[in-house]
Structure formats: C-alpha cells, structure tokens
View 1 (tube, rainbow over the protein chains, first blue to last red):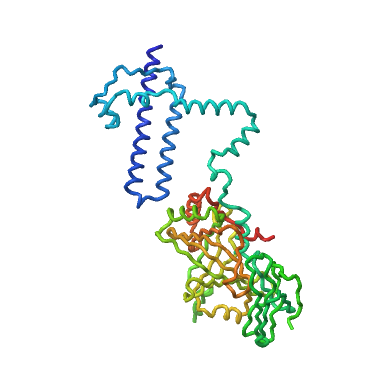
View 2: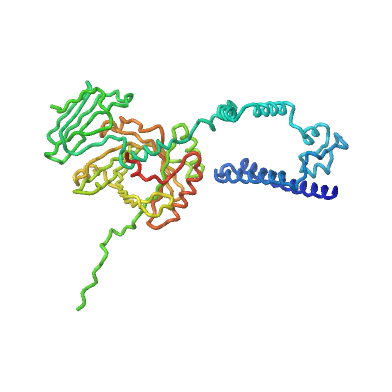
Length: 251
Length: 209
C-alpha cells in the first residue's frame, strides 16, 4: 500500500512540476513581449496571453483536485543542510534563480502557512462569513469598500440610450420636425426678431440663452427657396416654447 | 427577318448593388475613453479620425405609401469637402440568424448646392442633427463613435443641444449583396468589445413609439 502511495506522490509531483514549468514559460515569453515588443503588441495578443495563463492555472487546479493526487499537506519537507555557500548544482537546477540554499531563502521557499498577518485576516473573514446569513452576505459583497469601484456601479452603456440614439438617427425621433404647408405659427420670447424677405423666404431667429433650458426652442419656419406661393407653415416640435405664449400669426 | 434581341432587364447604371451591414450600440460618456482606447488597440492606423458632420434628412411624400428618404451630409470641420447623399433601403428581412442588419445603400458625393436641388425636386427637410466623434477602420469595417445633438434653430449648427448622455457606436461594412461572411466577421469583432459595449442588430422600426 505504501509503495502505491509513494508512486502516486511521485507521479503527481512530476506532473505538477511540468505544469508549473508551462506557466513559467508562458509568463517568461509574455514578459519578454511586454518589455521588448510593446510597440507591435496588439490588444488581442495580450488577451490571448492572459487566456493562456488562465487556462494553465485552471489545469493546475484540476490536477490538485484530482482524486488520484495524494494530499500534499501530509508531506513534510525538512531542510537537512543549510549553507551560506553557493551551490552550483542548485543554481543550475533553478536557472540561477536560487544560487544559495541558506537561512534567508528557507522561510519563503519552504513556507507551508501564510504570513501571520494574512492568516489573521483570513480568520477574520471566515468568522465574518459564517456569522451572517445569506442576505447579510450579499449586502456586504455589494457594498464592500475594498471591492473596486469600477466593477460595482459603473456601467459602460445604457440600453435605453442606445434605443433612443438609434431612433434619432433612423427617423428623427427626438429631433425638431419641420412639417410641410399649413397655417403659419410662431412663438418667441422677448428678443425674437423676424425678417420677411418676400413671399418665399421667411426666417425667424429666437434669442439666446437657449443653452441652459431644455425646453427652449419654439416653432421656426425653415427656408424655402424657389417655391413661389408656398408659405412656410406651422412646425410641430417636441420642444415647448419658453415663453409659454404663442402668437398664431406673425403679422 | 428576325427581330433584334431585346434586353429584358432594364439597364442599370453599371454599379453593383451595395449593401450596408450594420451593428449598433452605445457607450456612456464616462466609459468613452476606455472604448476609444480599446478601439485604438484593435483597429488599423495609429491616428483615429475625428469628425463633425451636419446631416439633413429629406422626405419626398408620394400619393400613397411610405415617403422616400434621402440623407444629405456635410462636414462642418472640413467645409470645402463635397456633400454626401445617401439612400438607405429597408432592412432585409428573412434570415433571422444573420448577425447584422442588412440594407441597400447608395452613396454619392455631390456639390454644395444639394439642399437647394433637393428642394427643387420636391423633397422637404424632415429633421437634421449634428454628429461629432471618432471614426476607426479595421479592414473593410468602419467603426463610428458619435455624439448626436439636435439643432435648436434650423440652419444654425452652432446652437445645438445633446440628445443623450451616451455616444452612438456603429459598426458597418459596405459590401456587395450576398456576402454572408461579412456579418460573421462583424460579430467576432463585436465580441472583442464586450463587456464594454454590446453591438447588436437593432430593428429601427421597433423603436417607433
């Protein structure tokens, strides 16, 4: 039985090593690209790299969860010899990343528990999570100050706006409409001027200050040239005149 | 004596029937920069174009049926460039699985006397607006991000008021009829813009209410 376990352990450690090597290589080439080829780098390529890393991490997770994988928690690693001297074999094995197996590197590389502060935080979070019911949990997730603002309440688009804009471009919904012949109707606040240039041309300007009020607009006659006998007519607009009083005839 | 052959089909102008494939969406002002950033990464050319255009929509009302619509557009930022006249047909119905809105499109450049000409022909301006924003290209695809404003006093393009707190985003391709790979390409491009914006096939007639 023990032999089988040993074999399983060896096999799973081997495959774990190879998977981690894949992640390492992917990270290596990605960092290289970012540092050296950033001028030619395209967004889809960056996305691909992230997708690759994500897939590889997923594979590692699956491997660890696999029932054939023995529990690594039951294994203990004890350093037998620490030395401040450089170890060439170790250096070669780790591609010069760990040249010395000393007291400094052991706490990091052979770590089995998180930092004390991190452990404290995790304990706190677990007790909090267990103490509150489902409702509370949801509220906490939604209104957690630590969670990035951007993800929470910044939507990127509004479907109602989309529909309104499409309608405006497709058939002028929400835009002033100019209607064909009918009785002339105009309304203007104090500063309105009017010029009559003969039967074919009429132009009305409405005084300034319209920037602020959404309701200012009022009916205006469009220019019509080359149309003798046809007078500009009442124009229906979606905007109400600011003065509220409409003069039916401009004479 | 044999009769000379008679052409059965009317002679067309010799142009190919072009269709416009369209997907539309919008983006809120606060997310505009993120969208422009992403588009800059995905599209061709380092310098995206900005534009400010004035579009006037003309109707010709016949005895019965729907009025005939023509769209006249001119650049406010480049006033000396020609005007553009565009006809857009009804969206093609049929293949519901097709990913983009498809409609007949005829586009010509014209001189600056276009509004007068249209009036002479009997068209009447129905509405107008100002569109300003950015344009990107990726291969045959054109992506336009525009801020639409209504014109408060006809003819006065300085005095405008924004229609909405969002920018309209349109992804379009002009291609001859029958090329269905176009909508596939558009769909995969649209995927790359999610979840920032959702570009969809929007039937304009459903927005009338």
